Length: 462
Image 1 (tube, rainbow, N blue to C red):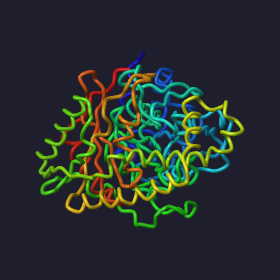
Image 2: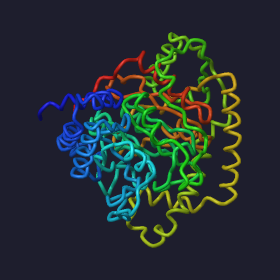
Image 3: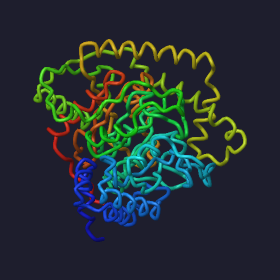
């Protein structure tokens, strides 16, 4: 296989400068990504649908506008991918399912509307765990997505295609969704950046739900700066989504590049145990790096987080049943076995269970905010181990993944998952940086400072 185009080496921040200066052509860039998809995605299976002709049309339009001096912003002419939960008018949108195997929406999701208006080029729709209900992206209908660092390992889920595409260099940036960790888990498994912003910060209009009160839609990118640039585009009130916030949208890049001197950060005791030796070693090294950057690193306690993932799963499963109730009765055989089992198990959750879990969420947020009263951000590993092998039935996803990510869906806080290095087996390791509601600025500030000090990760050899 020929070496990949050097155009694929640039992150969005660098691409935007080169595209605006007309040093790179959007048409040439888009073709480089389409060539890369053709070369490697048969093995990765990060895409369900590749929109090659539409992408070329968008790229030509972007080139014409940029040449005429009508630059729309940092995503103008940048090739991206969308998780296949996001509605795209006239383009197959499956939810990773057989049930919606021929569904073509008549409208766009707000996230794609905003990215399209910013001039982004759509490469296609990305693979996921069926209906976003799982963490492996072992999809029985559209193919098992694989981790670019080791094709025998999972890319995480449910946004596995979104994470894999970033490190396989088959998209410059992607959109994922996160209900119990489905942006941060793929970012952790694949070695990229995943941002779950504050709940309500980004519209969920036109995005298939899993759990209405837990769902988030957000960026998976190469860098913290790219995540900030993407959030600049997609954040903000949407009249089509009654739950979207009217909170003003700042420039999320405005505090990037600064230091951490005098900042206090808290390590969550309840989420800093039961991890593998490589995760513990990398997390400890990351804490030392933050200290070297001037931050004061201290332990904090959030007792309610001991059962935080259980609270999230009770709410998730109850709300998922509401969305799937008709299909599970009428078309149960069209679900994959694991998702069908989860939906059937959801039928055992009572209204009392659900109400108690919702009440517990308030306690969790109150305790998290108390810990943040004297700390700018909180820290925790993203998961207990590196990515497990595909089909490893002994691997407990809830204990090893959702235990670390799920509590922050319950609280709705902003969290970024960022790589801390590679294990001895060459697999990505990661940590989470957690902030106060609507304080993505500080979360991204810390992530960017750490990322610059850490330096780039070695790329996978596909």
